[in-house]
Length: 98
Length: 207
Image 1 (cartoon, each protein chain N blue to C red):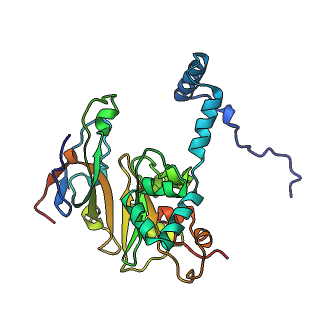
Image 2 (cartoon, rainbow over the protein chains, first blue to last red):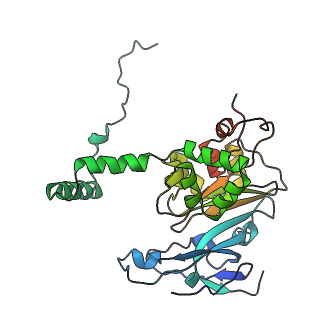
Image 3 (cartoon, one colour):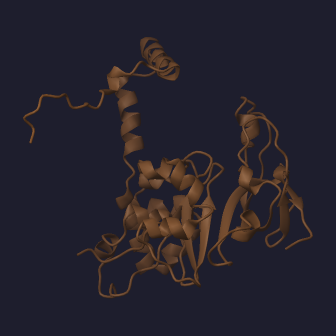
């Protein structure tokens, strides 16, 4: 059983990686900085499940909150608007930027 | 007006299109499982009935109870699946996470990668929820999408879009509209439509 590496309020960057496979991390978040909203739970990794690997331990899944402007630099609308995305821990790295 | 002879195009019947490979495989698997006695046609039908049982009215009941019972609402925000049992609702295995609208934050639900939806509570998803237009636009211009639905939010209110990318679903607990102070729980439920629970509309008193 793995334990959660990130805490609520912590800034994180989504890995700017583009591997093949059954990836549930949306392209539009890759390389973007957001904030951990909460730990959603420990869930099976879909990247394993898609290939029938049901023997792998569950991994931390976070709700990561992004400012719209961090995702879409040309965002028009309230600068407070946000998007929350469920992202698995191995897609996140600690960030210095808030 | 219609005295000229011409044929009108008719919508093809479902059976007119050739089966896809996946349809053939699904049908073959079903026939095999029935032939081998592992399932029956009746149990298949019951399974489909169970999947079809949830509906937006269940979500409306849940919201109405939240509005009249803050302790229940707290339990819904903790675990919607567990709290729904109190209303006799079985939301299934997939966890549903309720997000509560406030005067400061308005929540909207989407699944940009496919079309994940709180089906265990609301049942069949609307076609527009599956459309590429909704899925691609609502994460980058949510206010324009809400305007398309006739939903106007104050400029200083935060719009928070939830992209359900994992095996977890979201549902919106909207704000109770003004003018509903004297309503019963049953009357309150009539103010809540499916679109309110997705977050593209606001509850209103039915005319």
